[in-house]
Image (cartoon, rainbow, N blue to C red; front, side, top):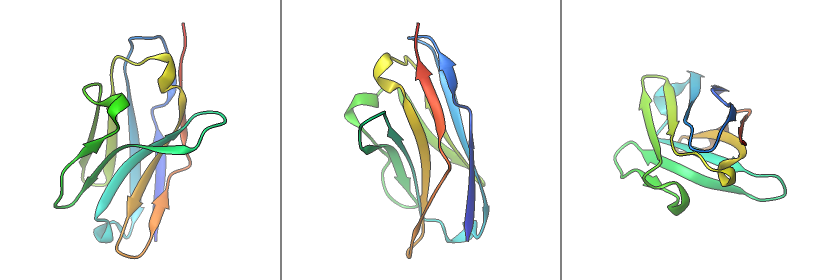
Amino acid sequence: QVQLVESGGGLVQPGGSLRLTCKASGSIFSINSWAWYRQAPGKQRDLVASMTRFGPTTYADSVKGRFSISRENAELFLQMTSLNLEDTAVYYCNLGTSRTYYWGQGTQVTVSS
């Protein structure tokens, strides 16, 4: 089992930056994929960025050049810059093994002036 705790969300003005953190504990040795998703009100949950143990890092077109996914030890990060109103959503981390996926509880990011 893997437990995930997210942090770093909040209220930010357009053009601002935030860094989200997802701290994993438990059987983290089995993790081979890491990703961030987001879900805006009334919309489906969409992939924002992802990385695998041996594969490329990918980004949604809407965040390319502004967001950066990274990881260090048991923590996954999402550095977000040049935030705009359309980035407002609940952000979820998602870690996967060969058998299942684990989700964080979500952290709210609100971009507003």
